[in-house]
Image (tube, rainbow, N blue to C red; front, side, top):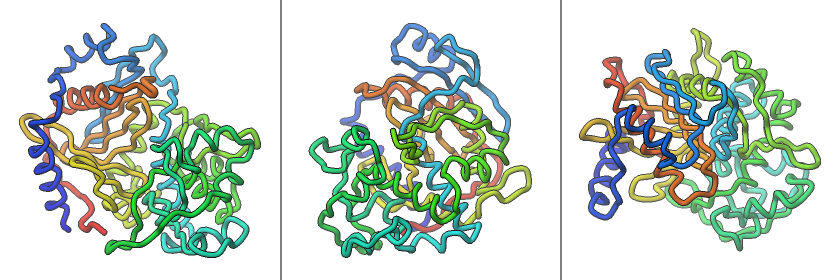
Length: 353
């Protein structure tokens, strides 16, 4: 599937659902700021946008100083996908087809021994783990009640697992699986996950060490709950938009970025999922344009928008609120509406697997 076909699919889905979807308000930036100040969009902490590598809009709404870190929840999962790509680039990990369990200390037989790095990246492993189902054995709140998250994840039961035509099993959103990816990176690199990411990703981008949530036994939550600044997120989005390059240095292989941003699942009329990155179209003028996103609870979103050569950041504390994502998209659309489309060539993934 070509990228143009993927974009066309986005647009058809949007038009097909337009009659039933509740329309979002169409705000310019001034109207958006007024709505936030009135509390109409819940607890929006910070908004920022950059185009062509230059910050064009940045504002705080919670009374804190610009750059004060916010917990972006599961949006941090997307950074774990970058960490896996860096470990592969460094020759520490052979690739996405590598079996996971040998890096985790013991064999459990099938289907566990067949779970590959790519399965966890695509949320498509054989683990009985679904964060969206409170009855699931692997639901993340169950993990947080334990002292050792790694042990919890390693002991999860199996579920029915059959690979489809694209080589992946059915989608099941699983934070515990992303925690295991962080553990794989630790074993492969010989460094603690946060130290490796700091050295290989954050330091080259000039990002101060963020705050990672840890278990009571000290494990880094590579499955999200990262407290980080909006400026840092703009930089990470720019790195992805530039296919792994930063100030002339290839921090992550271009091929990895393109693979990471390849749709693995179509989850609904307007959503695709790649390797711990989401794809959802954004309204621009009277039409829609594709965007890849880091997304977390509360409407915390980093959107990479190739058509506008732009990165958009929404940081909120609307955690577990029903309208959180709706409010975030209202802000994204207003920020994108203030930007002109880019005249630079648009680079994008060319295949869907």
